[in-house]
Image (cartoon, rainbow, N blue to C red):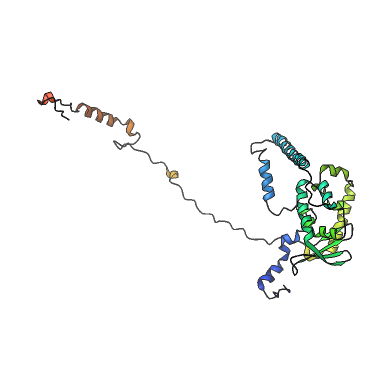
Length: 308
């Protein structure tokens, strides 16, 4: 607001007063696997519907879920074999890309490879100890990003690793700038790695009491470091718009069905096909039909044909 001289703008002042409700800004530091829409959940629902339906009971559900998991594992093994058959997909001879290719799954490696490809498009403007300031090479007066790297741990103001779980192009650019040839295992989450690579890692097992103590200690340290204005508040309550109740008008069929009448005698309780008066009328009319006249009876020459 100060930079663009908008301190007197009422609309901007109102937006700034409810800055605690800007959810995307305050959730970048939390892991969501890069999911920002409901498209991923919809695709999962479509996949599950291949195995279960609304008529599936509990016993069948357990069996069908096992089949779904088996199908996913077969798809993953097929992708691994196909990648091995096609050969290496490395675009450079960098040890960072080689390490990511050997550890990450094919899906996450493609994302990492795209970030690594764009890492060369950023230049380091300032370097102050463990603090680096980066900028896009085409945008000389644009946004600048801050990256911290002490040789073991890193942090980027873009917060791509915290949100997606994969290092961003800015951190990788600092790695290339500082001649770092190996990604720390801390930045290779187990959820994005192969099962074979997971067996090589050492897993730390702690008791429940120690785990609770550590969580409380971390929460206390975070609360001391973070300002109170940074916490997310509940959204404002809004009145639910409900349609007022109205008396429903009765339909035509609800007033009672109208009895049908005969089309010949106009009486009720029968139709024209079962009408007795129609049968009497047709029998009397049949007896009075005229006979066809022949030419000999009239006294004409039989050559002439007489139509009666």
